[in-house]
Image 1 (cartoon, helix red, strand yellow):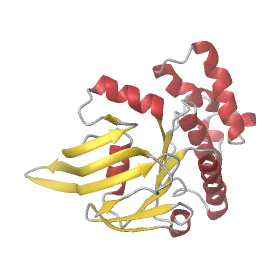
Image 2 (image 1 turned 180 degrees about the vertical axis):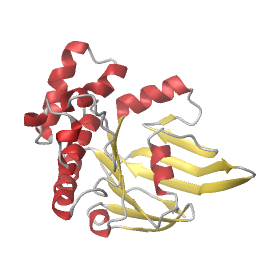
Image 3 (image 1 turned 90 degrees about the vertical axis):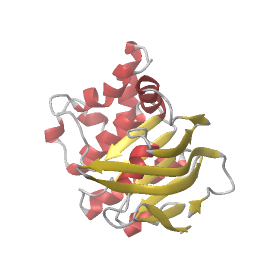
Image 4 (image 1 turned 135 degrees about the vertical axis):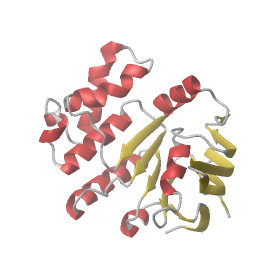
Length: 235
């Protein structure tokens, strides 16, 4: 099944016949099986489905963290399928922000230093790192926790710090993998509301979730099964 974007936006990302196979000993695991998908600029998309359906693999492909075995991926109008590792890393750093279920904050660094980290690998002048990181912490309501270590944060604060880090490069595409998966319901709602607000500001947001209520806050839901798009709906 091929999924299409809303008619009110031009495609920001497009997959055509996306196939991903992982070698596993003498056998192989087919994680994506001919997925075709278009994502509009400014869209909020939820990817849902049972465990093992290919959700996280699809998000990794969209985020240029993994490569297709077959098919094509166009991002911001560029065919990224054939880019070398340096150019792929450049695209990932400057144009895509990532939020993970387990936060992935560096424990030895302060919250502010964690947020600054993506800027070390980009073209932003060093004098702008701290002001930009502070603005992102203010945006997620954590300006008062910048000098703390990740171990001193609550789960919700850690996820908001991770979102600030994802925003610091000013990406057009924000990808979130189970962003409320390790949070209680109240804290999860705070993070979900923050993602809603970021989308309302014009960012393209793609999230993977098992949470039906979170998924239904998106403009569109794709449901995967066995590496294929099983259905598409617009809540």
